[in-house]
Length: 198
Image 1 (cartoon, rainbow, N blue to C red):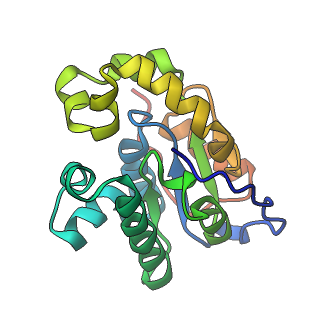
Image 2: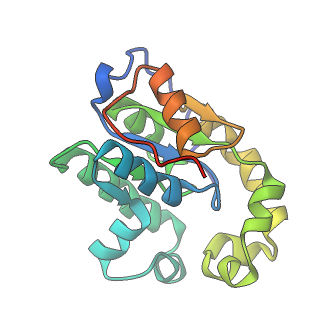
C-alpha cells in the first residue's frame, strides 16, 4: 500500500522565522483541514487542502479517481499536484495533505524540505468516533475495508513510519493554541492573534 523505499531524514532545519510551507499530515479524521484553516487564519497565510486541489485540477472527486483510475494513478496525480502547489504558490501555505500523501513518491521528503511538518497523531479510537457511516462511505479505501476502526489501525501500522518523519508531532490535544505554542517552541512563529479563551 505504501512506498517501501527508505529515505534519509533531511538534515537541514526548516527556515527560521516562519518561512516555508507548513504541512499537516495524519490519518483521515485527524483534523488536518479544520486545524489547517485555523492556522492559516492565525498566521495570515493561504490555506490549501490537497484533495480539494486535486479535484479542482482534474474535475473529478477523489472517490471517482480511485474508482476509475485506481490508486497508483491517483498517487501520481496527487504527487504532481503537490509539487505544483509547493513550487508555484505565491506565498507560504498552510497545507492539509491527504492521509496517504506522505507515503508515496518521496512526498514526505518534499514536505520536510518545503518547511515545517506536523503529524496530528490522534488515537484511533478518537478518529473512528469522529467518522460517521456516511463519511466512511465517502472515503474509498475505508469503505472498501468495511469499517472505520479496523481500517484505521491497519493503515496506521503501514503509514506510521512515514508520519513519524514529520518534524513535529502533536499527540495530545491538537487545539490551535497548543499547536501554535508547539510551533513557536520549534522556531516557527509569525504574528497572529489567538482567539479568546472560551
